[in-house]
Image (cartoon, rainbow, N blue to C red; front, side, top):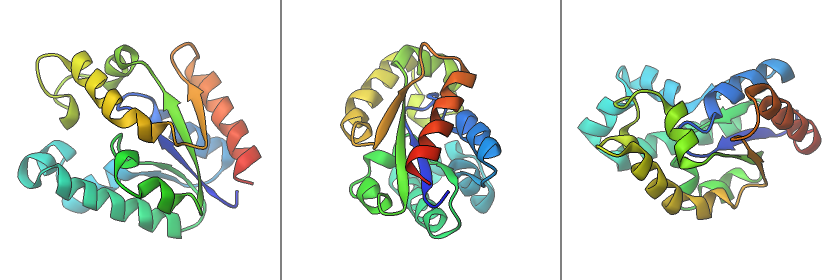
Length: 171
């Protein structure tokens, strides 16, 4: 690969799971931005949000994605809100192919795991919150170079499609 592949989408869309599998198949590094931030800060994302706020987290996230884009081509999985930050996609486009992993709010909520692990899904109605996130972020997600529907495909099918797109567009 000569270019990076950045996976965007809602929390629970499959960015981390698919990203790991695609990276393994293509034999390139996988960059899990949330995990990087947690290691550097020595605390979970939930705690970073609670102590410093979303804006501080988004600054950290942007810095880690920018750093990853300067390294060897890889599969990059930022948080679900990265793509909605002003200028994030435009800055990444020179060095990356952006793939939107599209999932319905209901599917993404199921996949996102137990409540309490994702700061943007806190509250009594995680599906409702996910719908709000989609409404806020989808205009940015739609700016991706390509989208892959994940709801009616198996993990293997989504992975194969992203590998195909990476080989086609990031070569």
